[in-house]
Image 1 (cartoon, one colour):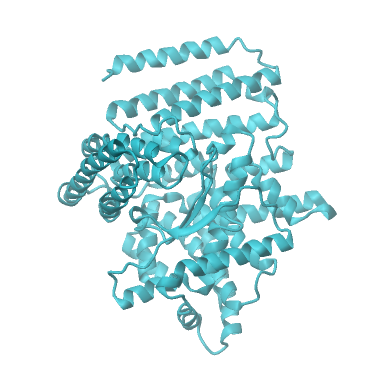
Image 2: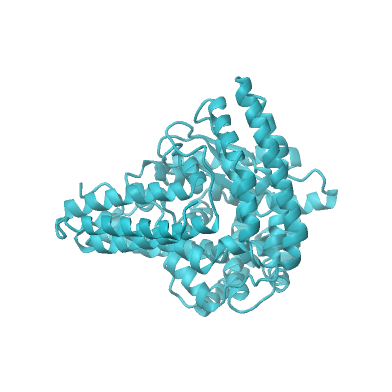
Length: 583
């Protein structure tokens, strides 16, 4: 194991490389762009060295047999390397001389490195987040199994190699974790049960499909060790870490502001965000009341929501209902020419992996932008738990009533995240392929829920009601993340407020609020949607009579997924795509 002296050697080497690069002509756009491209390539290779699982997810399979190392020394090494990179970026690249497209890439590289440092230095995720470790272990293996990017035996050999490292990886977790918030440890316990189930059932089933007996034997043996380590980690969470988990999940005002500014370039004061979101809640209540009067003029909003939420499919028909809505949405987008669909559509609706079900009802898993072969995408839907009572199943399935299946499918599939993923794959910029902003990504998907209905997809008032209902949920996220992280609200206060003001069932409110304690930037959905709507009107004014939604949507998605203040700059400057490059 390398000592701290090695870190200094690495830092010195990076500094020497920075000095060597300064010989590049500062004012030559072509040279500056070439230097930036070379630096970006080295940056992402280093990032993948620190995050082999992220490399696999991105479609780079050169590190499929490696697992993350979150030991204290390795994290310190990453911290030093990131600071050296930022120094190199500042001292060797004249950003003012770059062509417009590369100026965007420069800003995104800087943001990516600063965000990673934020997570190490300020958010201290390695010390505070017990969910990080078992979820990394399970994702590292699942990412090798879910897509056929190579023959099964080859992938199982990589599975075995990663699983052989999991016991040590989870032992390091025990050393790293100091004083996490109790609610985070309880979340980790819920999720870790799914991880144990994953190693107990999914991996052995896959391993038995190996054609090479040696590969099968190695994979099963490695999985037994990984399963034992996962069970031991769950025991550690329940019996050791939970009793001493006394930390505060709340960021506090200054760190909340820093997180918003670094990750999403949001510089608005928390109190202003809260005031705007509360005003949005009031306006949403009025809109929902108007739609409810169309459904039943004599019933209250709560009564209409309660009644229409019962229009859900049976448990066995849940996935088929999502598939059918997805097909209807795709057909409408094409018929109305709302958005050009890039090549490579390959989306399957399937159940959410067991180790991800604690915090999500539905999500999309698109192939990595560098993936050359296995391009299938997954629209995950969390099924009913067979162990639940009939009443629990009924309450859960109300989150998949007819109106919410529409909003979920438009958000996750067409024209939401899945289409975003297709545009990412064809983006010519490596930087834009491999960086993303939640305000852009989630803002676009949330915008799609409203836009598709506005364009005439359906006149069914139930669909409009639940589009507004989901918009209200996103407004609640913005309200409650400020109140939880800045104003000292407890999770129970947030749950009660969400049930009362957000028209949410308690089971969903509890799941949502748990998430807010771990993800302060859940405000990205609402904030991002509002910014996309504002950008659309800005662009409409600029384009005049030639404006079309299809053109605006294409230009927006061709940007990649930058923070929306940067997207605005790109849209108005005409640097929305990476096609006019300096090389």
